[in-house]
Length: 249
Image 1 (tube, helix red, strand yellow):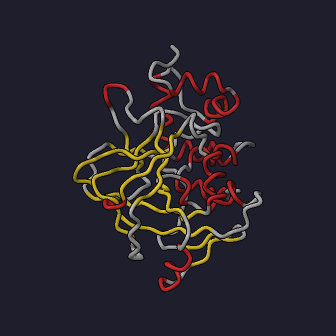
Image 2: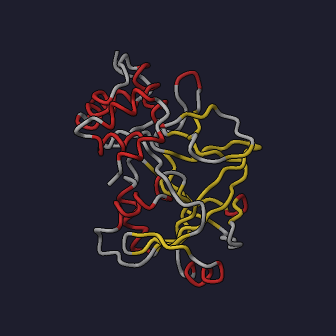
């Protein structure tokens, strides 16, 4: 659940007020606030809450786990809670942070069922991007595949760990990554970075989530308003049409 005060992060005052006053505000906040607030420090997600973790404990907690990049909402406690708190997966999830060279986190060319445009990883020579790594058990990874709609929306790949430097000092040889099947290139070869993710030397234009939704709405001939986003949530056919390279006119 989101608090209405979370809407204060939306910089468009008109949109913010419309969301705050809407009876379906929770659904709208879930769409517009992606990729959601997350701690900047390493933490342990356990029993629906996140706990700080001491650096001396990180190697022990990661031992035997599978490192998987979390480039979008999977680094956020609210999303981990939504995905794992109601499953028979009681083991805690370790989340560590670091930097990845020569990449950026950008918007995927598809839309989620809850109305957000999700993230994916893109090559970007000279850019360093802030990333998180979730350390999962085999059962947790299997469940994460389901929540990521593998192989429909994402493919699961193994990336070399050499481009990643974690704050805690762990150096995985490889990390798993969910890469968008739809890609990340929009009209006129545009690529849009996720502005909520910190970078150094960013090459791409950065958009907030609400800017990205507005971009898709405009190119499909719609006005970006809360009722439009709710239509996308309620109508899978419209959602797919708006998110494709050749939208409805």
